[in-house]
Length: 464
Image 1 (tube, rainbow, N blue to C red):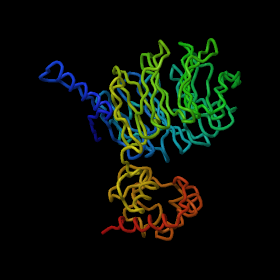
Image 2 (image 1 turned 90 degrees about the vertical axis):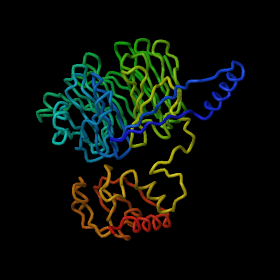
Image 3 (image 1 turned 120 degrees about the vertical axis):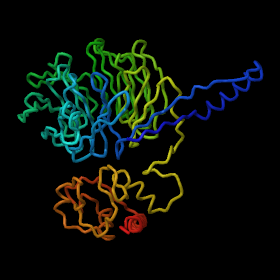
């Protein structure tokens, strides 16, 4: 684990404070000042962007799910890495602890839900196996438990939500209840407080209400018009909070069927929602890195600031008073006090990243950074990434690097990587060259960009 702590003042605040301090010296004759500079803490255990965060019920553990195919369990409040969970064959989109703390569940782009026994993970992190649930035909983007932890609901881009009996599922006898009614992906789902009903939110803009006993669709509570990406349901307080593809952040009263709050940035998708443990605050994060935090008592906006140069895929309002943790495009997660000044006034285009370099570099290196570096490294030993290291790739048979979990398509491939086969990969696309591969489908239309990328790779991947 790597930890970096940065002490930053936004430029405009620094200049304003300097002026105030100068005035105080001049007017009051002050002979000394004390400054309280706040820290941003960054915790790194992944080799790809972090897509979701969740807290255990007792607040002693946190899980992060990543594009690098892994989930990491952290001990709190120290943020020590307790275990790395390897089991998915693609990006892990979501992770969730059960309310009783026994289970951790993860869902990924591989269409699988994995069940991990928390006690086993902590006792033997190097040799723990998950129970796999494989009924879905599309990526898993939502997971939630009933309040008694007896049932799990998964939502998928295959257009369904599935309800699993945990006792049967963990014994390998899974036969989920399938809820099929949305037009397009189901992005989120939640149980009613008594576990007898289910709420589902979808790309079709509906939040639907179902009776679980007979799988009956009762009504659409919300007809938004634009897709609903994220949802939080609290029947005790009688509300639903949700975020949409067109940028709306909404708190809806279930009793009166009226909106209590509607705000947001038009046409900027809302990607995350989080409630504080004491339910006094709720936060939303959007695709442009903005976070809005609302006071639940007054239904008023408390904080509105840019927290990342990139999408806020997940955020947590922590049990420690005022702490917030954010997951975005970077490999690390960031923590700071929400009452402090924003971590930086993040000027566009933002800080340099491996996939978004700002320094002057060759076109080939730039294409690698943009097209390849999220998934691949050039180092001989490699770092944990979604794809294998490209060190020594030329002359290597596809799917032959030891200890990397290739798709069956690459394991069965007879391709030898060369300038010609790599060029074809980016001309025709991975779906054509290696059908069934886990590689993201992308093509490079510009021949000069392809040639420059290949020339750069030929230079930097040699095993000299």
